[in-house]
Length: 138
Image 1 (tube, rainbow, N blue to C red):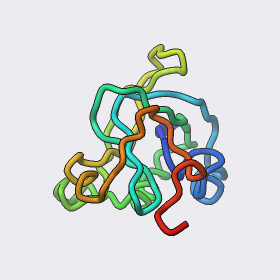
Image 2 (spheres, helix red, strand yellow):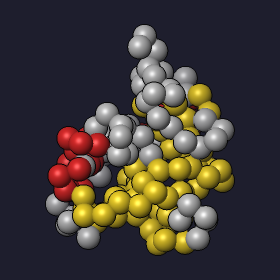
Image 3 (tube, rainbow, N blue to C red):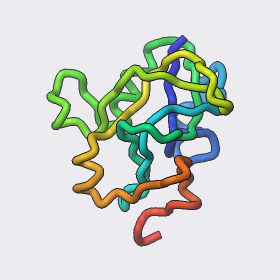
Image 4 (cartoon, rainbow, N blue to C red):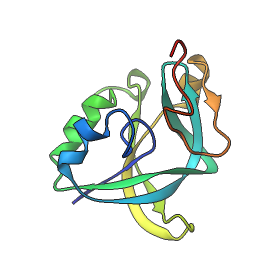
């Protein structure tokens, strides 16, 4: 199975979960990872490297074939230099909601410099939802 940690619009209950994830998910687990979470004015979040707890969902897909679709959705191309990708796919640790290790999963991380250039706002509590953090103009 393919483990992917999602923290934004691909989480259950958010804008793109039903279309991009729900039909292919075998299991899902509320979970945490370490990093810093930002809201971008464009209406979605970005995870960067950091030491805060970030809340999301660990999705398990049937097989690795879903990864190419996830890469396209997140504007990631492994053949390009990191600076040319919107997000970078990384294999990072995931934890239970009580901070116990769950293993590792793929997740999409943005470079801190890009977050700054986009005007990202730190979400100190580490949990994003579109209802709480709508895009500018909504």
